Length: 157
Image 1 (cartoon, rainbow, N blue to C red):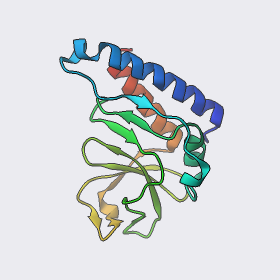
Image 2: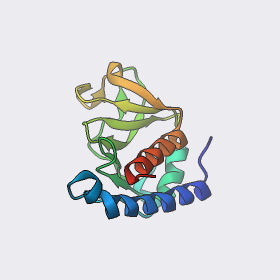
Image 3: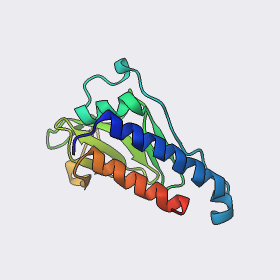
Image 4: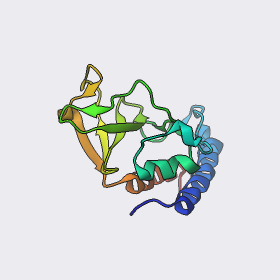
């Protein structure tokens, strides 16, 4: 499924509601104060030139996501994404758009799919070792559905 802005707006609004529910009952459920769970507004067009189409649609509605207490923690970073690898050792160009609390990064190749998980330890001179990469979702929409499910589980839904 290719993303459309109406679906991303629904996702953003529902994630904002989930973030409120996570923050509201988190301490009672888990015994410690939650981090800041939030879904930000759109990123400006000039912040994300050259990203795959679905990621451009996402950024036009949601600039960033912070879910520090959802599973290991998940973040979709606001562009521009300086300091992250831009290629894999097998020659594929990538755009890193997110990270997890375990040191991993989430990326899309130029083709826009699949979503890749780059694990720590595979980075050499700005190029990530393709042997330390796994496919975690067929495309960005499937990855966003995964994040939504994880947030809903944490909220107790």
